[in-house]
Image (tube, rainbow, N blue to C red; front, side, top):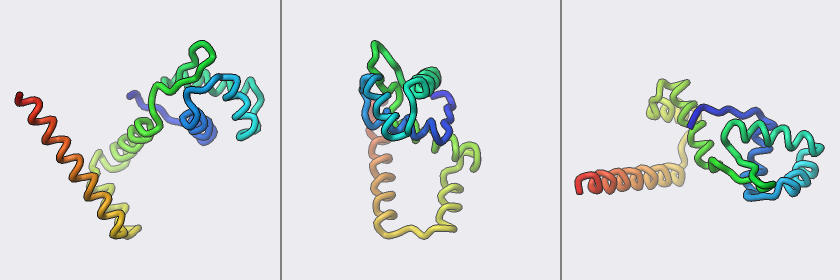
Length: 130
């Protein structure tokens, strides 16, 4: 995914779309009027901008996500670690842990994620060998 950044207002709008997609553009206008106090032209201007960035598609008046919220924020996180820690996840984690202790529950969850990632890596490697 190309590097895409969102301002605060664009992020709020994108979260609305991700929460309701697929959604009719007219319904999106109503949601943005209610939640963001926007007029119709503002909604369409921001939608057009985010479609241009490759996040959403407005096809026949139906707005869909091209990139999921999870994939977008995962890419943002990867970019942050790359830009600020030279791509070193251990350096990022060390800096994070130096300021905020890890609870047992968080440590257990991270351990489960690491184990699942290693298992997936082993499965992918065995498929390549076949």
